[in-house]
Image (cartoon, rainbow, N blue to C red; front, side, top):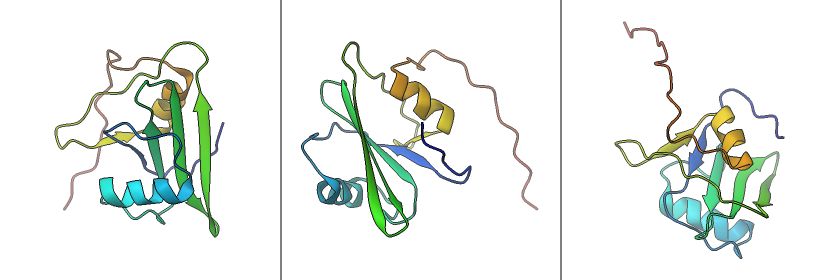
Length: 117
């Protein structure tokens, strides 16, 4: 699909978005819904109300990229929302979401992180 650098963060919008919005409308949605900078290079994922369409938005080398996918059968499965209300996806979770795979019951191993000195 898309090759994303490991440092890229992927944010999923909590509310459904009107899929008629173009890049400018999605940028306005990012500014209204996220604390992240729209020019950060991170990916912002939007789902339609019926969960059969999605748009991804990110900034890349002087312009916005919009990727659109519509499932002909089935629905996208919205992942669980974290305690802080933000949904941050890994690249693997994004690929699964775009394939229509339900990850709500998939256990995730606890990831190790170094202690801060």
